[in-house]
Image (tube, rainbow, N blue to C red):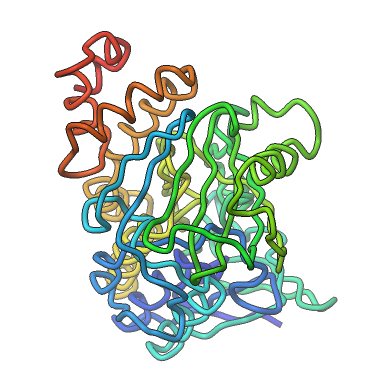
Length: 395
């Protein structure tokens, strides 16, 4: 059996579904293939997003997948100093704490309504090629193997992406460019109901602890640490358990579920297209290297991808040269910020607890209008220029 579509998308996360939606509603025949039997599950995410960008990718806010809304972000230094900022200025992972499985299903539903077909519990085991050009995928669906031919294959298969590697795009990561994470959903606790919290310092080597409230007495409590700093298997859980034991708010807490996983905290790829193939989302390393967040970037890039692919269908041209419109489009929107945050991450992981204390105390005293690397460094430079000497290339 051989199926044929204009576009085949590997992965039904936010990147895949938004690509599918915009390609389908602009006239492309689209098949989205998901290896799991249920879209969005298991959840591997802190589940925080900002409100302001959602509707820009054609998805209205929906109470069905909103778990809780907060006023903003709270950044906590190792000595407990707090800096708070409202959600409009806090970044793309703050404002709304979602039910990620329901959110992913909603995005897939929008793709389906636009005309995309969805194939579940199906594993892509390889790419089809003709004279070096990608022409489709080989699929294993519950023991049945078949081919799906397509004008273009979209690799939206996340952190563990194989599609890019099969297509000849270098997606390898160094240990310092990977964050390994562990998270509990806890109840019968006392989180600050008004803020998503980010706790810095050696309690989470090369990363941070997060507390994202999902109700007055429930929250996602997680920890991410740089893989290069992991010394023993299970370190992320060990560090998280130690943090929870040290915080009185969690002493009576009950664990409802736990998730673990990894995210890239690298610079974006130098190449995300080749003949008949594009990469979107975490498969293309479109992750904020400081926060590890990537939903907004994946959706923005997916919109560009879907619109470009629909044009390619009409022109019957899926060459690497034609797909440069996607390459240039997503980079124009997010590449500069991704590189800046990656460069900042490289330096932030070397800072001591004492330096973090000074930085957060300065931000709490002076304030910052918009939480980004440049604005933070400018505020610190005015009071503690010695703290930003190593960040001079980012100013």
